[in-house]
Amino acid sequence: MGRAFVYVILGGGVAAGYAALEFTKNGVSPGELCIISEESVAPYERPALSKGFLLPEAPARLPSFHTCVGLNEERLTTKWYNEHGIELVLGTRVKSVDVKRKTLLTATGETISYKILVVATGARALKLEEFGVNASDAENVCYLRDLADANKLVGGIQSCVGGNAVVIGGGYIGMECAASLVINKINVTMVFPEDHCMPRLFTTKIADYYEDYYKGKGVKFVKGTILMSFEFDSSGKVTAVNLKDGSRVPADLVVVGIGIRPNTSLFEGQLSIEKGGIKVNGKMQTSNSSVYAVGDVAAFPVKMFGEIRRLEHVDSARRTARHAVSAIMKPEKTEDFDYLPFFYSRVFGLSWQFYGDNTGEIIHFGDYSGKCFGAYWVKDGILVGSFLEGGNKEEYEALSRATRLKPSVDNLTELENKGLSFSVEI
Ligand code: FDA
Ligand code: NAD
Image (cartoon, rainbow, N blue to C red; front, side, top):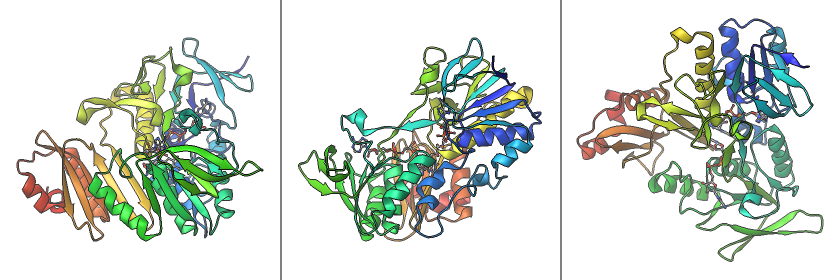
């Protein structure tokens, strides 16, 4: 015997928090909704973990960044869930799901049944072991996905001030953590296999700007190589990193950000999987009509590109979650999801935003030796993507609006000359 709910959200991250708020806005009754999360705290804004959480002075701490403060909405504390009659089952891993029977089995042995399930299991950080290197258990090797990781990293930072950190990976985690380590007065070496940072998004020219900025802050880059092995002291702490190019970098702290894998395993063989995620339609509904998927784990149709995509960014988690709940609670009034992909990052005093798709020809614009510059991506004569560093609110809004319109671009030189004003004037 177990408990039964009308709606169950599996996972307690960003998407779960925004889904819960949307359920209450749509009149869910007390006792109808349950959230089950492996984490021991109510849903929070995960992006804070690589930014405010790592600051040496006045760091961000819960409860200040529970969802849904990221979109200036209510902050949903444990008390809020209690007051709204939402069952929050924390610190509990779901170990199996039977979508035919509509039941979940928790690691504590409880069976929970649902009428509608929202899968919001997010993703897990890839471990070094998956690349054949054993060291993840060392006390000074850190990943960053959840609060437990962030607490371990803060401990690592505190015992490393003035020392050396090696950051493995040149993606989002690598760049944001490297900046936070520098702010904590730690010497940073970044190691990654590509020839420039943020290879999934940045052009070489954009990457050069950030790498130069980081170098100005003392960060060293070792590019085009990967980690081969670690050296340890007698207590099992890492003391140095050996790279494939034969070099050796001393390390008091290692931070690893080498990508993620969506948490789909509970559903493999039960739901359709595409692009590494759970495939959904424009209502965020999976191949089983009682199961919806949202956030990092969902592969959804991006209408404006006519393609199924899986995005790993907070805006997409928030909006797919809201959309799924709207489709569940108001099916007749909910159109197919029509999303403009939006990513952003903030490091040091820098701040960029990206909209759309980074495919096609690249047109750089603005002052790459100054504070405000950007790029457009033009595919088959249509503007499909845009990037801006150092813009203001109106400029970012203009970029977003222009990208959504997918305007034709006949003359690339004219676009380059117009730069940001192309979007502002549209
Ligand atoms: P999320 O990972 O948030 O939540 C998944 C939840 O499911 C977790 O609570 C997990 O414990 C739980 N779970 C999984 N399996 C389970 C099981 N079997 N049983 C029970 N619970 C289970 N994006 C961006 O656009 N800008 C930014 O600045 C940042 N910054 C950033 C920093 C850091 C440190 C990270 C790790 C990520 C970002 N991101 C970001 C990405 C963004 O945070 C991410 O896209 C969202 O958190 C995805 O939200 P989800 O709810 O899908 O997964
Ligand atoms: P990522 O995919 O952004 O970057 C992974 C990086 O790992 C690659 O760029 C590559 O440089 C490196 N790499 C791969 N294999 C390697 C190897 N064997 N040795 C050394 N380096 C290797 O992933 P991430 O940086 O780990 O970020 C994890 C998740 O968190 C992503 O989903 C990301 O979108 C999300 N995130 C987003 C933001 C943001 O949007 N601002 C911020 C932080 C995290």
